[in-house]
Each structure stands twice: as C-alpha cells, then as structure tokens.
Length: 108
Image (tube, rainbow, N blue to C red):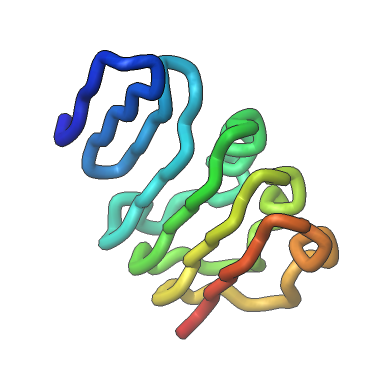
C-alpha cells in the first residue's frame, strides 16, 4: 500500500488499484501482461459494478478480439487506455455517448 490516510477523504493506493474511502474503487491499472490473453468480457462483467471507476488502464496485455462492449456500462469513466493490445472491430456505440469520458486510447 502506497498511501493511507485516516481522514474522511481517505485514499488507498495499491500498484493496480486506487480506492477512495472504504467503498469506492476509482482507478484500475492492469498493464504489462497482468491480464495476458484473458477474456475482457468476463473481466468487464465485474467492472460495470464499480460505479465510481474513473480511470481504467488495460494496456500491454496482448489481448485480442473486439473492443469490449462492457465499457458502455461504465458511466463514470473519464479515462480508458486499451493500447498495445491486439484489439480490433469497431468501438461500441455506447462508448461514444459516455458523457464523462475525455480520453479513450486503443491500439497505438
């Protein structure tokens, strides 16, 4: 754990996960083969339950297939980085209407 504070606005940080307070996951970063060749659709089913998720980085994992449709259900996202994978297909329509999303990177 890199950061822990005990005030009302506690933030907890691990290498791949950041939480705000005791209840809210705000950032997930799985980079560098941490999810090597996994099924993003399966991972995404759980991520859509994280209503406070703001930042999602899943890069450098050699993931193949379509750009994941589960992103449409992550309304709070402001940043998504799926670069350095082998994703193809079209970006799901619902991703384009996420009102908070400012950065979306795929297949650099």
